[in-house]
Image (cartoon, rainbow, N blue to C red; front, side, top):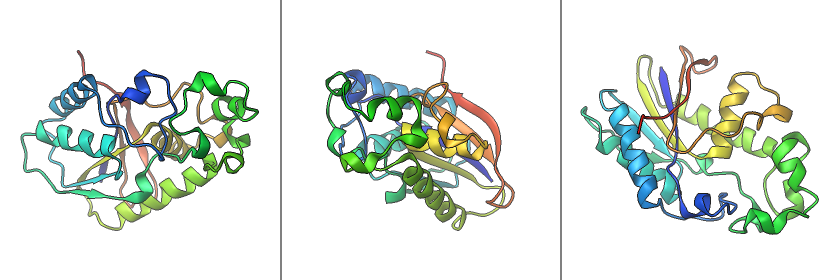
Length: 206
């Protein structure tokens, strides 16, 4: 099984440095749509057997645009609520600069294992990791060997999941940054249990 994990294209919240978690649902910008379509062109010859997406519009639209550029038969997009971005509670939709004095900001960006999201009605990174693993297990239960699977989701969820698959401890999940918008990270698995990284955060050439 080969998994193509795609982060959605740029949204207005990304441009404005506003918290863009699971509680907000902005659409892709025009540039974000072009990014997603270019990614689709890069993957145009991949025969995707299945496609799963977060239910948020930015992820679903990205999946649609990637598949729109594909030259092979296009699978139906199945939405999985467990692929939704990390819920950021009171922070969602708020400018990052407006929260610089919040006592949880440093943990959120630099020591994820210490981030207590429950204090702001949000998830913790461990919550997101657990939910992402559940999503992956659900996907694996629906696929067969030798299939190609497209998964469209979000920066925090994908970074947490994919680095965890590489045995990165939660404390170091954000080191090196999140997987970029409109990028694809590819893993292979023979049994849905052990995952092997093939390519990390590849973006199409402009």
